[in-house]
Amino acid sequence: MSLLQYGIGVDLGGTTVKTGIVSSDGKIHSQTVLPSLADQGPKTVIAQIKTAIHDTLKIVDGKTITGIGIGAPGVVEKEKGVVKNPPNFPGWNEVALGEEIHDSFGVNVEVENDANAAAIAEAKFGAGKNYPNFLFVIWGTGVGGGIISNGKIYRGPSGGAGEIGHISINFDGPRCNCGAKGCVEVYVGQRHLSMLAAQRVAGNPRSKILEFCGGDLSTIEPLHISQAADAGDALAQDILVKAGKHLGIAIAAVMHTLDFRVSIIGGGISAAGKYVFDAVTESVKSHVLAPMRKDILVVPAVLRNSAGILGAAGLVL
Ligand SMILES: [Zn+2]
Image (tube, rainbow, N blue to C red; front, side, top):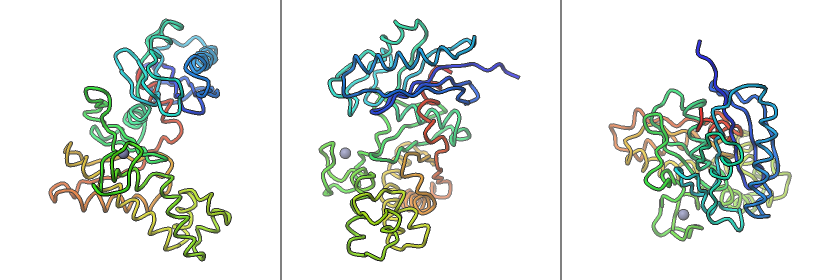
């Protein structure tokens, strides 16, 4: 039996910073959650991260720690642990987060983009354990991703690999936040799906979506759409099937480019279940070349909310 190792994982988000002690078998032994106070600028955020790590270290209980791994939004320059322009962190251009944390705690510190960290979590501890090569997709407000190749994260020369949300599926489509047209994120992002559902329910007041959202169209979330779909609502099923179809087109592009067969989908909307996964799978299959088709697999992520901490700790385990 091999001896377990322990690392600290830090999941930095726009609202909270979560830290935890993680063992090399993928168990989280204790967790601390603090507000990240992102609107108060980098100094405050870094102080919050340090406090959270301190709190976690207090309960380490004599275990030797292999280091501290941090998953952060934005582009991460991995060698120096620099986090660049994380969205929803005002005043934050480039911050040498790795150095800051290393100087305070004197242990090995690794920083990685949060989508990549979640991909690493699924590869080491989750749905990707048996797949050395897969595309990881986070499907929520936006669409992000990470590429696991030969069991390791593929970052690309500047750490930007796996930005599947900005693959265009329609060169003439609606404008995306990034400035380009027809990005898949514009078609399947959470906000778009909620809006689309609200519009279509307005013209279809008998849709069960209305029941699940409590009668207020402005509060529709993908969960309500999937609940209605499960209850047999044709409109809800149609919305999810189309979203799955759209996402599948972008995934197929990646399967072709990398000669991959497997994609693992996490994030809020992936909880929408069967309709979505069937639709994505069908779409990927129908958009790849025939010899690839039979091996195409679309798998739900399994780590959910713990993926951030597990993946961050996975950087040092
Ligand atoms: Zn875009």
